[in-house]
Image (cartoon, rainbow, N blue to C red):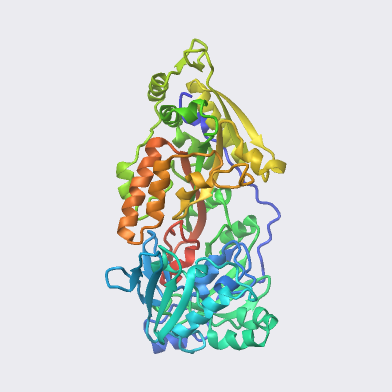
Length: 568
């Protein structure tokens, strides 16, 4: 390849027969003027109009059903004991402070059990004015663990041995085994005074109560004032929110499953921000060209997944599996900037590590990891040192004449196939004899077939604190595990296994962060995986709406700081 221009793909998006929804309620603010006169710091009267892909089946944390964009509803209408800020740093919400080893509120014992003492913020109330107490937390944990009640999961509550209420604002959790994220327990309590009588009556009364819907009384920055099924959900600023009264008085959340409808409504001015996966890159490009260029909106892209190549390590004689210099050369042979320019029009950036730039551990990691800039000469030198030389036909061979063959495998889909072709071409031009294999939709759930790829498999995974768990020897997909396991290529390195175990069991946050830095340094030097680029969430924000910041990818939901959003 002689330049990047030839790789840039021309995008087009045709919008036809789009009807802007006419049923959107007016952006009114009942009582807004009176509130403003009574308190100069009251929220402004201009309402906020949000687009989300799905309508929630219910509100209420682990009893709310989840779904795409579900976390945004939780942050808007509910609250957690603790959450992460935009850098992945734990912050107390319903808690007055986080448990700490330093002050003795977090104790770890030799047998692996732990005690954590939690102190709630004083004078916190539910939306209906009832005081929020430790008894609500105790009831919530018991409800989550009750197999007769419909909670979506029991992580991490299943590790709770017991919970003792010391006083209305204080409780102690006795953990049966180490839980390193006990200081950022994302529990969303449910109101005991509402749901306990229902649970005592019968399961159906608990599960089908109107208190999960229009009558929801939560702890979040907004309280439900209206819910029109299939259309919108309306919220009013809750003046008693523990982190401060929201700056916007009213908001409407519209359920818009069709991205083209979201584009049309942004252009028409009937929505102000898109959350969740309401729009993708194609729609973001269109709105960037049509709205951002005119100063009417901005397009925010947030890295939330990493796109990477996974090497097959089962065959120890395969070139990439047996020599780290081969894998390093494969990285140097890729122009990853040209790749993202071609596929995503610069909406993202190449990735040297799975951590994103807004992660608290990123800066320290970026200083120590091995990096592989596009340099074909460097790739050829590494391969030659590993015994592979490019012949007169341009193909790499070893001393015995064996050709360097490599299958590049990717799943079906136009974008994935284009990506696979670009990667395959880069490696082919550098001397590797590549071929492209596209996994048909019918085989995407065939775990054995997916695990037995012969060369490099291209994947994407959401970024989370335990992302590196997938490279553990114990996570290898094998016949014994029925080919299940995140480690499809069966990478195995005892040193990495040990370092990861130390990282994931270290309670002290700073020590854990230091161990993470050393762990990602090792994976970069060993080229455990081939980092390509970040996949992004795309959000469009109308000009004048302030306070939205990129979320930390380990925590779902852009609305984690909705109480800080404002109109200017």
